[in-house]
Image (cartoon, rainbow, N blue to C red; front, side, top):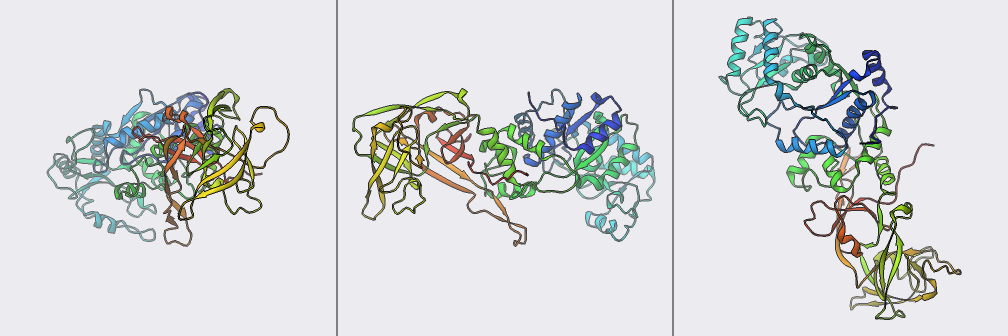
Length: 551
């Protein structure tokens, strides 16, 4: 993909490491994006994807897509497929470099056996709770397991029996033998294998012992020849064990782990457990609910991959924790959409407008621009007739002085058409307004070159005779930052407003899920990919932005 972000001007500390390590042979750079297939990817992963693939492209290296599928209890083929779709949609290609941790299970086992033979690993019978108890705390050292002194022969025998399925889940683990007094808890004889009689999506029932992530991950990187293993800051304390594992075997090159701060956004929770709880509880319409900050959710909502990549690149990479205002992500989206979206007539909350002096049997076709900011998108014809629909909030019966839309005695321009003057309203038996009546001035037709009076307001419309029924979903944040809440956030009860009585111009019946539209005054919209033949539009983002660029 052309114009793909490369992060050339961000994360200088990482560039410095790469240039120092590769010493002029930058095309030897090998990176990887290593998701665990236990959920859908979110916007935070998008930054890691963009950086790892973009960095490899910048230096002429290569980036692998690799699934860290070491926990069959939580993993699923659905997640594997969704992740591949997300990476491709963002614009990246792993070519023939698709790998799974499970591809290396035999190698992991061999390495574990080698550690046992070097007296660097032992089989432990402590329960999970006992292991935690023996580990100690940040302020107190741990104590050695009573099984740490088992002989190499006994450990080899027990480990092979673990592999053969002789013991139940949780009965035994294999632990690295390092240092129980280490100030880094991750170095206090960490577990590297556990028993789990679980079916694996890739290896079936071949294995009943599975490697721990912290043991498997450095081996995967080393086996694949990864030169720089770039991850987020929560793995910084795990780096000593990463280095311990790869240094125990004869790998060349030996990968280097580098950490950067997570991509965090205001009004957004990206924890996979939180997102999964929303899906499992039915609070959202699956992982691709347009309110979810998953890549699938953003895609269904109508975000463009270009806008996400731009946001990831421009926010940069840092060692320092920071939170990006979600308004900046929305700013990047608007900037991308405004030049490529067709501007169309759509009325979300319609009220009828009757032009009483317009002939009942007359119809006109009016020429309007598809996008005023992009003349290359051309023009189209829209219908005009005596009866129209306008937005209900474009009319106010008792309007304040600075209300520049339609009100009794006030005049506005109808977008691409005429000036109309409000002369009255029709109400039902409950006093609700059902129709707004106006007269029009035939000398004020848009594009006719007239000169004269001006009006302060322009409103859009849809011809009632040609209107097409539609629905619209107006989305807001699922959570809102709230310092007064115990969790630091609160759920937004108005995260979805369904508009079920919309009317749109006929051209929208030809919309596809790849099209993006600007509904005048209402924001940017796209067809919902789960509309099943109905005209259901998702609001991608509103027109107004709260983003204020630095001066």
